[in-house]
Image 1 (cartoon, rainbow, N blue to C red):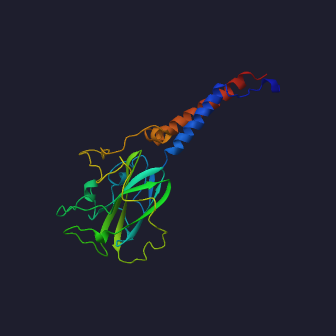
Image 2 (tube, one colour):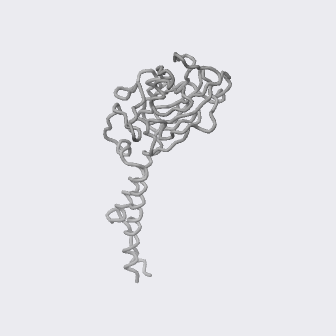
Image 3 (cartoon, helix red, strand yellow):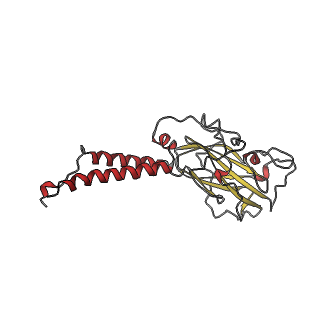
Length: 260
């Protein structure tokens, strides 16, 4: 085969254009990966496709084993994959929470449960850690003490809207629990959330259906991160696969047809 008949892909060929599109899709898909993760206490589960479910990010069943958590000033650690966000930390004292309302009031008596932490504005991607003191909460008719079962829910508000993860815990007065975790409350977190990104309660659940998006979700604007938020990871995978197949077909097809 003469080298003169070999196909050269240049910036003007369809294959090169498809490859460029493929690279752009890959970059956009990368920005749409995990929005945030709850690292400590251990999360019930994580699935970015359903993380917007305002009842524990779609994981509705309690964990088989509850993690011990120092309830007098225990750490809550997350990893953020966004440049800025607002974090709220809620607590349910029900043995088995049944929905987002379980983090607002008790099932027995209907007493209000204040948030553990509220309107924590974080800036920058990476690991963040906050301390929360459940013993300081005033919840009439409820026992907050060593051995109490509870569930922590973290609400993460970003350009993707409101996202959630939960951890089922058992309160302990042992201050050594979690002490091996390096947790200094982030200097970038404060009590005043960024304008337009605050929430005082979890979003309400739609009756007879999945959790509804919060009405207070921040408005999305331009930028690759916002564009990625409107396309699911499964759709990204399909687009990338299609672009890759088209690029290969375009690159090999002409070459095969002109073999001598």
